[in-house]
Image (tube, rainbow over all chains, first blue to last red; front, side):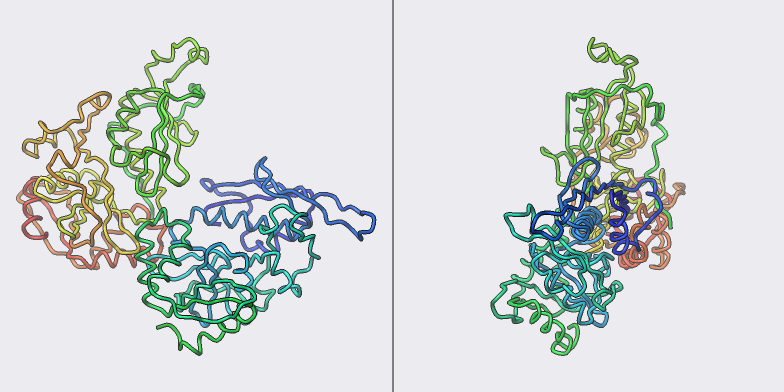
Length: 290
Length: 315
């Protein structure tokens, strides 16, 4: 991916099968000379039976070279954290794109871009949109190509957070491990991978931006679309920047011009399901890109 | 389409790759940080004259602290035949330097040759590593808010023409790398010192007296290095490309400026791109936008005559 190669070896071959299901399209025989190359090793742990418990989740560790990057319970957690880690590494150097933290889906070939500060519920919103027919470009990272200003797909699965697991219980096979905060380190980092096709959707082609929607998650509150001023929208765009240290003022020029060319909204998200409904109907309400 | 490297000057000599002969030190007497557009470089050295010379040559890019990003690590140390030379101090008498980049020994040569190689390498890694610009092998100057890009092959006279334009009142963007921003299509400054052949200095009246490059290790380099202020110029700001001027290799006769079509400009620029393959089709779109400028070819003339005709008829 992006001139970066990864290898994964595992104490349990079943993990490789799980990972292959999500990343099989990216599989290579060997790194190409000149590529960055990262070696991962997974110690998947042993299954244990404890008194009063049907079967304890295996506690495993994932290592990058000799550095342990996290501990997880179960193969799906291991796969999710592995994909999350290599996604961040592979996209870190992709400075040919203006990279922002954003969900991105396409309806009828036009992208709804959802720039956001770090937000664990964003992938769930993207997953919900894919389930209703949107095509997937990215769940937490969007790649904006600066010449033609369209959005390129990441080609990776959606990685939903542990709190939103219940919204996708029908497609997540492995039973959840303990989610008590005092029982787990890095609970908020846990991710579960879901393919677009598991949700009845697909991965999008490169596509132009049709809408900017800035989500603000206030779960339990009302869900509604609101107008957002140009300055505030540009500020939110800047907050979502991931490689603006490379692009500098040019990223803001790009953001300003893109924001001026399509409809822009604030989305208050009280409920992910309601937000999906609102965004699904964007096309009819806005009549396509301005 | 193929990517190109900056051509290595013929003056750079020395052994290539002899890692067996190099014992690497663990402590450095000088560590400097540079940011060349979005490319970051850390230079560590055990040879202070080398570090001093690099600071002077790369002064526009020097940073007091490590810039954000993953740096290329350049290391230079005296070549020793015996690891014991580090403890006895015999390494201080070593005649050859070792140059390594990201842990790989690239060259073992005399100090001036290593300096020349290091300067070439620092400039060459920019189009190789930076992904946020499309790079042309081109000089670039600006007056007001309008830039002139001057693509040309090696030894066609880019640097001397740029020097003459600076002497004629233009501000400086680069003598070798035309950095095109994909967002705005503007030409951006890559303000490395101008590098002139020693016998080209005479083309710019009064320049020799203003040069400050003959000091320390730099005094032993064959090329002459010119700061914009040596020509009474400043580093310019990013600007839209008003004109593209392709320098022809033919320097005989009076200067001859001819108009070219925009399509011809795109065709020619493709051949001068360093990193077009990284951009693919959208790189061609970007070149098409740049080619919307007025397009010329320029042959013949001395550097001062070329600058005069460009100042009067193009700018």
